Length: 193
Image (cartoon, rainbow, N blue to C red):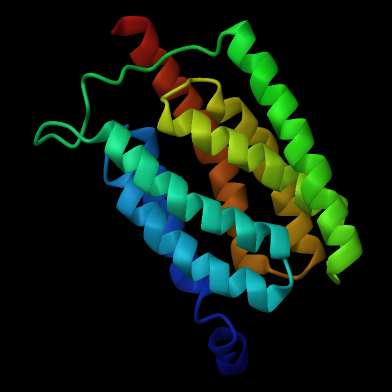
């Protein structure tokens, strides 16, 4: 048991801070961003150790986008920015995001295949590219980011099971349920505000 725990010094706290991140995200509370920064730092180390290189790079992006989101969401003492309202994804933005996500997927997948020993390079690239997009959409408070997270979290859960990363697999099972909850919560807030 101790050997199992001792090999997860970065994973277990990463799970904890990731859950806090999602908890505050569902509530549209600005505290999600500092929790995201801490979680990203912990998971960068953990994913490097686990040879999930695209996920490691993704957490570097999360670090940067958390600062960006924090700046966008910054507002009053409530931790909620009333100036940045929940919006819907327009078709033009959707097409641009689809194109950017596709290019990011192909680039990451190609890099992983050629230059790493990743055991599942294309799946790693796929979830990473979608995660880039969903996190940018979260920073902009676009409702549909939750739909992307539901897909990413479900797929990731299977990938982490395959690699034996069980605490992170459980985290992503919880993420999937919480993403559904987040979508419902944000949709209600969008409709009634």
